[in-house]
Amino acid sequence: DKSNASRVVEALELAGAVTRLADPENHRIRWIQPTKEGRRLHSRITGGLQREYSAILAPFGPGFVRRASA
Image (cartoon, helix red, strand yellow):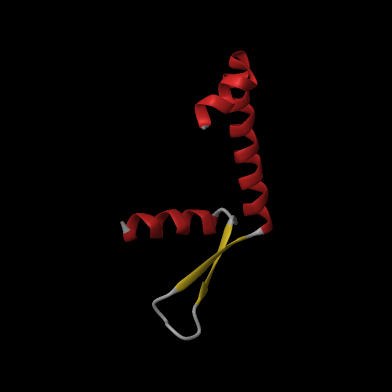
């Protein structure tokens, strides 16, 4: 939903994670770019998820992971 997306982007903008820029050719379009802080936060989140998934899959061994994703 557009209104939900707008609220999420607004919250990220207030937190300093993204910047919103107007499109010079179409006033209805907004470009969203991550800030340095936003990229750092993204790395922290994805790194944490990778560690969690690695811990969950560790007991199964590499062979199981390869077979399951094939």
